[in-house]
Each structure stands twice: as structure tokens, then as C-alpha cells.
Amino acid sequence: MENTDVIIIGAGATGLMAAYTLGKAGKKVIVLEARNRAGGRIHTIDDASFINHAELGAEFVHGNLPVTLKLLKEAGITYASAHGEMWHYDKGEFDKEFQQVEGWDMLMRKLNELQQDTSIGVFLEQQFAGEKYRHLKESVRKYVSGYDTADPFMASALALRKEWQNEDEDAQYRIHGGYGRMINYLANESQVNGAQLFLNTTVKEIYWENRHVEVIAADGVSYRAQKVIIALPLGVLQANGAVNFSPSVPLYQEAIRQMGFGSIIKVLLEFKNAFWEDEEAAKLAGSSLKEMGFLLSDEEIPTWWTQFPEHSTLLTGWLGGPPAAEKKDTSDEEILRQGLQSLANIFKRNMEDLKTDLTAWKVVNWTADPFTRGSYAYDTVAAPEARKILTNPVNHTIYFAGEYLYEGPAMGTVEAALTSGMEVARELL
Image (cartoon, rainbow, N blue to C red):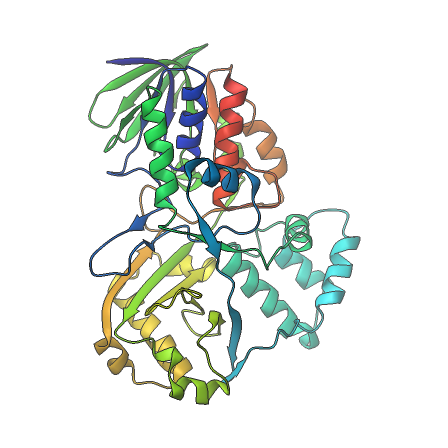
């Protein structure tokens, strides 16, 4: 039996930021984590077979984000621009020039006129009926699936309007040594301030009454505190029976079901040589690809990026939204084959030759991961009202926290997770 002031369930960015903030304020904290590591959807590996600091989860700092950058400065962790050339491969041709989707201006004009929220999928069908808008609708749906990892027929049109009006595409960074350094800093500082971190501890039951909770782990060990912060991924909370509350909290559980949570598969492929930089690739593209950052295509694994401006032989593939959800139960070996075939089609290479040139590979199917069950949150039409419920604690005893509760312009990011952890700790204090 362990007793403390506050129990935090989940040692991802949200949970650790809450522990760090509470610890600095003198609170006794226990953090319970189901995995054998901290970090959640942040996982930097230093496997000898891979490049140093390969990111299996979160990889970029998407913009000049105040909480993230302040924390990195405090920790003495540096970062650098990850800005490279954006290339497109479509209908057998490479194109570096940015070409706005035909009809985008009209799309934004109609979105700006929208008063009553609806899903972006329904909005497109209502406002852009007919064959002449087929390309526009397909492009928007693919973007929502790929970037937001969302189902277009669940994603809020008004939320996407806000996102598209606040994009800062030029400000994108990678952390030297990977996001894992930030996680290690938060975990170490929390423990210096007295927090206890228990790994391999899956929470199954939460018994509570006013200002008293008892948390029961799968191994039968119980933990008691005055308050509990639930910092689990939304996908885990949405899974039936993953965590049981007694007494139940039906209003909160219904709000959780109304939030959107995406799907993602990430594919890391390291080759003997950066073949996309060779003369054959340059001839196909009509220009050198040595400064390529991102490559977008219509292949089965459609999005790829390099480590530019760092020279590396690693290519990372990305599949998001409903197409990733459909592949949830697909084997890693089949995903690898699809990734290699996608690259073979783009670069006019033999797939078996690419496979032979592989030195390491890793498929990260976050949607199939039982401790994540998806990628990151997106707003549904019902999300704003659901968020109002979830950001109010249950009898000042149960607090919910996570990137899905963030309301700023950087939704679905580490910034969102850190901000939520900091805010819930301050509210509890």
C-alpha cells in the first residue's frame, strides 16, 4: 500500500509535466506507468542498428511553441531547424513548386461563412457537389487524414478552419538528441523533488470518494491519495473496460467518447545509401533531391521525410487517419513491403533491391499499441462541449489531462500535452 498526495496515471509528456509542476510546489506524487519506460507517444531509441536518436513517436516541434521551447531552454537542450524542400510525386512526376489545390481559396471563403459546425466531410459534400470538385474534395480529405490523422466525416470543420488560419509552416524544429532527452529531464527532475515513478504498472480500477482515491494495479498493488490525475491517451480511455471507475462517472465517460482520436502507422527505413540523393533520382526529379525534407505522394504509404538538414540514410514513412485504422491488424512485415513498394514506385527502383539495401527497419503501429490505441486527438463537432466537462474535476478529486484537452492552435502536439499537464497541476494546487 502506497500513500501520497497525488497519483498520476500515465508517464507521458502530460503526466510527467504534471509531476514536475507538483513536485516543485512541494506535493508528494506517485506516477504509475503501464510501459517499461516513460514517455508514452514519445520514444527516442539509440539502437545500435539505427541512426542515433531515431524517433518512433513524436519527432518535430511544430512552430515557436512557448511551453516546449521554455522547457528545452530550462533543461539546456538545443534544437535546430528541420526545414527542407517539400516535394510532390503525382502521376509519375516530381514537383517542388508549391501549388495550392485548385479551389482552396473558395473552400476557405465558404468555411469562413460557416456558422453551424459540421464535419469537414459533410461540409465538402454539401458545398462542393459534383464531379468538377472531385480533386478538391479528395485533396482535403487526404490532408485531414494524413496531417490530422482524422476521419474527415468526424473532424470538425470549424476546428480545421482555425487550424488552417494559424499554420506556421516555416517554423519546424528537431531536438538535438531527440524528444527523449526532454522526457528524461522531466522524469529526473520530478524524482529529485520526491516523485516516485512505478513502471510496468497497469491501472485497472479507480475507487473514489470526495478527496480520496484508491488505485488498484493489475498486479493487485493498491495506491492511495487525496487526488488522482488521469493522464492516459484518449484511445485508452475510449476502450471499453481499460480503466474502471467506482462509482462510475458516466457524464465524463460520455464526454470522452465524443472526442476524436486518430490512427497512425510510422515506418522507419534505414538504407546503406541515401538513394534519393543520387544522380538517378535527380534525373527523375529534374533536380537534386539532396535538400528534400518531405515527399508527398498517392502511394500506399504516401508521406515520407528525410533527416535534412542532417545527412542521413534514414527515410520515415507516415500513414494516418482511416487508411491507417484499416491496417491496424496488418503485420509489420506486410507494412514494410508496402513501404518499400511505395518507394520503388516513386523512384523507379526494384523493390527487392531496396530491401537488400536495408540496414534496419521498424514499423510503429501506434493504433495497435494497447497502451496508446491511436495517434493524437482531433476535434469533432461535439468536442468543445465535451472538453468543458472534462476540464472540470470530479468533486475536486479526479482530474483529466492530456493533449486532447488543449484548446490552442497547436492541437495534437507535444506542446498540447505539456500545456495540459502544467495547467491541471496548477488547478489542483
